[in-house]
Amino acid sequence: MILTVTLNTALDITYRVRSLRPHTSHRVTEVTERPGGKGVNVARVLAALGHEVTVTGFAGGPAGRVVQEGLTTVPGLVDALVPISGATRRTIAVVDERTGDTTQLNEPGPHVLPAEWSAFQEAYEDLLPGASAVALCGSLPPGVPVGAYAGLVRTARAAGVPVLLDTSGEPLRRGVAARPDIIKPNADELAELTGSHEPLRATQDARRRGAGAVVASLGPAGLLAVTPEGRWRATPPSAIRGNPTGAGDAAVAGLLSALTDHLPWPDRLTRAAALAAAAVTSPVAGEYDHRTYETLLTTISVTTEASAA
Amino acid sequence: MILTVTLNTALDITYRVRSLRPHTSHRVTEVTERPGGKGVNVARVLAALGHEVTVTGFAGGPAGRVVQEGLTTVPGLVDALVPISGATRRTIAVVDERTGDTTQLNEPGPHVLPAEWSAFQEAYEDLLPGASAVALCGSLPPGVPVGAYAGLVRTARAAGVPVLLDTSGEPLRRGVAARPDIIKPNADELAELTGSHEPLRATQDARRRGAGAVVASLGPAGLLAVTPEGRWRATPPSAIRGNPTGAGDAAVAGLLSALTDHLPWPDRLTRAAALAAAAVTSPVAGEYDHRTYETLLTTISVTTEASAA
Image (tube, rainbow over all chains, first blue to last red; front, top):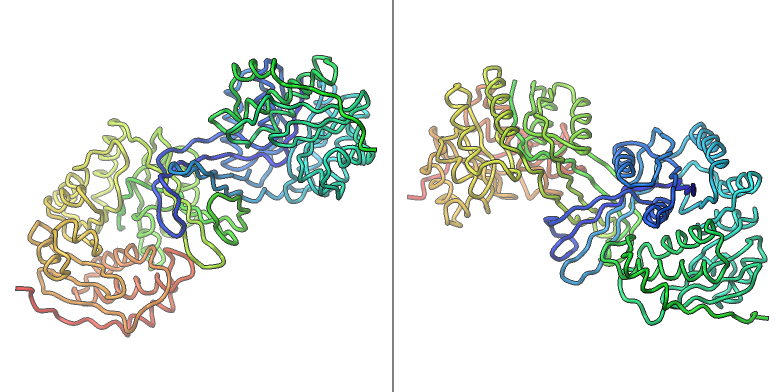
């Protein structure tokens, strides 16, 4: 099984309104709810690809109950979220039916108590022996130490389980130093980590900081990977139009899926780039269309990349 | 005890954001939640005034559970909400910290099944013998027949319990014809009911349609009442500044409180107008400051009003 960790799970709520006008009152015409947080999104894509996947992290309060109930409906997915006294956050995406634009409102995460953080670390150690790979995804809720991912990376490495880290800011900086097998920053996260806005240079620099491989997700430009086996760029056939929300999570799922299928790096990048592009074209943020994905698999171009000197 | 009916209860959520900008992402800096719906708000004010109050209506789903948990914390208030399979709606008020303005997002109500509507009517009949007055408040959720309030008014009258109706549109039109003791429309509701934008004429007309007494809430202009005992206008001492949300519900609570205290109409209007004004000045929508209320009680002017011919 593949293990995904989401310390800051969320109940993702989408509201459709006819037209969002600040300082007025709106009838919401449609409400949809879904378990969320980056690792949960990764797990959903992995399950759709046919992998056995276990979700851990934290869940609490009314939104946490809804998240856990939602996870039970996904075939192939096992819920191993650890209970907390605080309430799982909600995120609200308000979709303007007139323009198609989305306005996002994100609640702060729950405060995690020291005993809850300890309980999670024990649960994580117990899950690792059954995992073929682990993904550590997203932001840290209040109360979880900023070096949390560094510790979780070290525990995974000690257990011999390949570990992918997808976070940002200081938790990423500290986590990279603990030598995760893969990190998947986007352009902003990469620039924040390295100080460089030149993608290839920054990707190489991120690897020097401790990551075994760095896969940078560059939006419409696809993926740029610097790995122990070489450097590649994976590019979709043409500009993909749609909603980029969740494309990064789909790419992470593709990397893990191909890693546990023992594919070489170019094939991993093809799978990750095709899933990311299929997620962008999906009408529902974070979902992907399987037929689009299969078509894209044959059209992703993977080229070797010279070093940035 | 005073009974309040809220068929379309809500979980009222308030988000504070630094500045609301459509089509961008926002961190919510503060989340507050409270049981809501007009009859629930009326009950909260009645309980704060020292009355025993029972809340009925519908509750279901995760938000319904939070509403019911919230009601247990209000001293003097008894929760008699009837369970439904659908989910109680949420309302989200997004407060822009920069401007102080509020943007409102209201979910649609849950679909109420015929068996659930029947169960409610039985519960209502069982509660009426213990009630000194009943308030029927707010909109109807989908599935509840548009003549619902007319039936509930008749049942209350048959039980000899004074009944106040505070709703709008077709449910108000039909409810008025069933001869409630009091209705409390605002200016828009009154104009929709009668076709007249002239408050005194419209208030008199509303009474001719079947209401025993009509108390029109006219915002900063205070209350205008046409009753079997006479016509009065209750006016606050000067323009009250603040948030008018919940002022109408506070006025309803004042009318019921004074009715069950057997006060004459001018004193009922003083109490209702003072509570409404105290609600406007409160920093929290729907709450009221008790000291402000007591000060205002002595400064509300109640004057008799000539007929509109």
